Length: 314
Image (cartoon, rainbow, N blue to C red; front, side, top):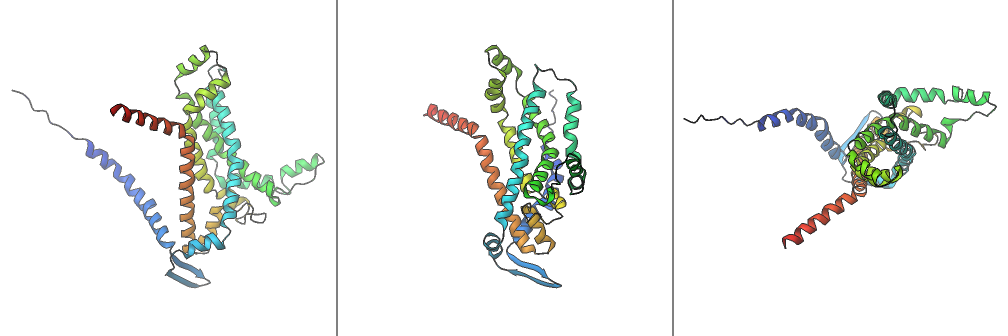
């Protein structure tokens, strides 16, 4: 007599374990997003002790931001500061990742160096900003050192290049270690037989890096670039603390999120909501184009394979 085996369906347990994630996402992300979009169509702010609104005004908040505010200037500031920090970050991260994963160099104590590189990332941005504010102030240690060498005092926080440079340098120090470790993981995931075959064929280190390493880590490069771009658009804590929220000198270091914070601080919820939606759309568009540009070779390859499959069927 055959014994009946009981079939157990474990699929439901997977959905049960996903419930906490969806609850957290709905409560802390989806509902605030919908609420922000909803409030962006209303006039709702405080004038002294008087509450104005909420009054439905359609797209007036958006038109005010585009045509009556200085948002394009602050977006430009944000992009310039982000580029000043990201370009050296990605260059040094690629170099360090290539060196630490090169089997021919046989570097020792790589674990120690990874820890040292990553340590600035775990320091709070507020503490980092206060440290740099103290070091590069007019009477700080850096200017004291310059004066002892016979050089004049340089007012870092009163010059456009000095303030932007400090913000970019802090962002570089805080994030290049994280980027280096991500790129190292990407390179270590490449099949070593590819490097051995290139070496047998007589390829030098630069040719191997250009023809094998870079094409195979493109998806990770896309991830690094997109996450860095999103972080750049959200740049707030470092310039906020370093310039006391004023974006000095002459608001040349005022970022888009600092501008948003001023609307929230003044309780202008309608304008803040419209600005948040605009930044969300800008982030989505830039991320899409960055991803398509970096992965265009893979996308073209998939299209060609699909066309070949269709031609074979016909």
